[in-house]
Amino acid sequence: MRTIKTYVSALAVCAAMSPMAAVAQSNLEKLGAFQTTGVTDFTTIDQHGPAADSIREILKGINLPEGFEIELYALVPDARHMAMAPQGTALFVGTKKSKVWVVMDRDGDKVGDEVKDFAPSLEFDVPNGVAFSKDGFLFIAERNRVMMYPAAEFFHESPDVVAVPIVPQGTLIPVEEESYNHTARVVKLGPDDKLYISLGQPFNVAPEEKIALNEQTGIGGIIRMNRDGTDREVYTYGVRNSVGHDFNPANGELWFTDNQVDGMGDGIPPGELNRQTEKGQHFGHPYYGGGSVRTNEYAGQDVPVDVVMPVVEMDAHAADLGMTFYNGKSFPAKYKGGVFSAQHGSWNRTDPVGARVMFTAVNEDGTAGATEVFADGWLNADQEYDGRPVDVAQMKDGSILVSDDFANAIYRISYVGQ
Image (cartoon, rainbow, N blue to C red):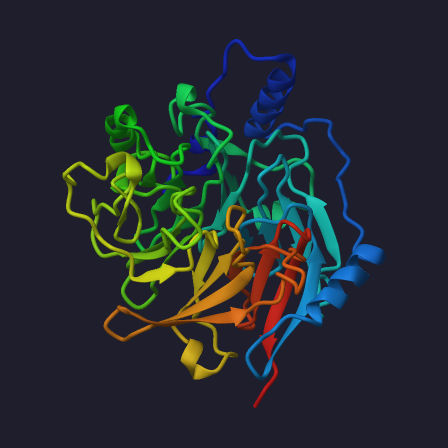
């Protein structure tokens, strides 16, 4: 693997920048040259007061299987996808705005007691996707950039960190394809030590004139590349907007959620949990709106590709997002090797659905078993949202964390039964 200095030497200088962007780029260049930026202040989030008390009251109404309990882990604004650092000392939390947060549990009581922003001298643009390599490199996927931060688990204590653009600004997707819609990237390290990054396509149904471009660039799919950004290739095709993926530790296969087409009615099309068994498979969009339901726009056309159907069809419009395979030891045996996934909750149904954590068992042969509701209650009796889960991450003790960008919180679910 290349050294940090070799990475740093690849820093690109952007031209024709706005003053704000120029300052951000100047700070990035300083960090790449191991120079200080002059930024000294962090934004910190108070972990006490009425907001925390209100969330704890809401959590009393969350339904869980017998023997489990849920607690407030930390107040984190706009909390989206999460990555636990390899040594377990810090949790990094992405957002759809302009911050990445670091949560510290310094006293070891399984409750976050310090939340502050990461690399405050840098300007982030939808830094939703966060992931750690096993050897301690942090990767952050933004709307149109991918950054790498060596030893972020320990360097985050300083406002200045080593920052390397492995996919420089404006090159993750063509600049002219940048959008305000479906821009929440997810990044994970695969068993081959490569980066896998989801690229949602911005339309409800991708128009025909975009199909060739999408297949070429990986928009509407999942791309794969080396950790230094080289050897980029499209790994997954026919995805509308995946905002959650992970690898089955038993066989290395990629699984991912997908948000399906809006406006087709309350009950269709279903949300998806997908299993990919080889590179290059196609999962149906834009020919299918979800599952086997054809889109109105392509209903009269022959499907020109072989389509892999989802292994689980979820409730329509529940907005399936982050997911993780469970390999901890503290939960009952039935959960070992299965998938925990978050449903953000519907916005376009007559009767709302979602706002819960699902569990899907995975059989020994790699197929999906039964899917059940694991945690719900954030959609209250008045059909209003008290929370909207986004992602699920596992702690070293085998408990799981659930992020919520509506309540601005992260919850910890642990097993306390016999």
